[in-house]
Amino acid sequence: MPVLAWLIAAAFAVAGLLPILRSALRQPTVWVLVAVGGLTSFITQWAGRALWAPVAVTFGIPDVGTGLVIHLFVLAALGEALKIAPVLVLGHAQPTPADEWFVYGASVGAGFGLVGAQLIIALTLAASTLPVSSVGSAVLAVALRLFPVLAHTATTAWLAWATARGRFGATFLVVVLAQTALGLVERGAGALGLPVGGLLLAALAAALYAYVCLLPVPTGNRGVRLLPD
Image (cartoon, rainbow, N blue to C red; front, side):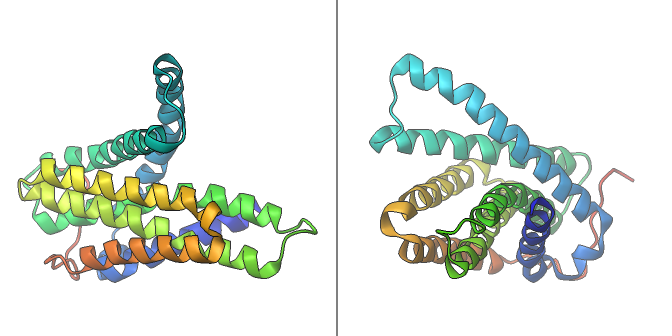
């Protein structure tokens, strides 16, 4: 099951990268950055738990209502900051065109989303073996994990693209708010029911991804570099 979960999550990451990177997928640097994004996801999960728990206890912040919104906003800000960090390092290592920043961001974001999706997919596949679980609900739950991967790919690619154009601050706030909204919808999916909540999450993530696909980035035939010449 864990191996299958990794394979499915990896397929989702490729599905997210293929429409926006096209031939750039042949560059080894893309896959190095996907791995960096995966590592960033692990760091974010650890740091989020380590930092938020004492803050919530100290200030008495509940994980419901306004407290939940604050929690998800902080986690989204932490995640986006850590995802963009390696992109900033590479982008400033040498004069880098904006389309290469976009490639860097998309690759890191896909790796970040891959790791998050793998965990949920593994749990879903394990639960699907229980007598109370149905094959249809398990398939739907797994398929819906594609959309958070698309969202992470999109927000980091968008932020990287905007950073190259001197628009980091405003775009950072927008992508953090977008991830916060997606987190709220995902948390609320249990109350709405899997079909309704899941489809709402899919619609929001797909709209975000579609917007990023429309950004003027001619990435089709450009290679990417990892180190200065």
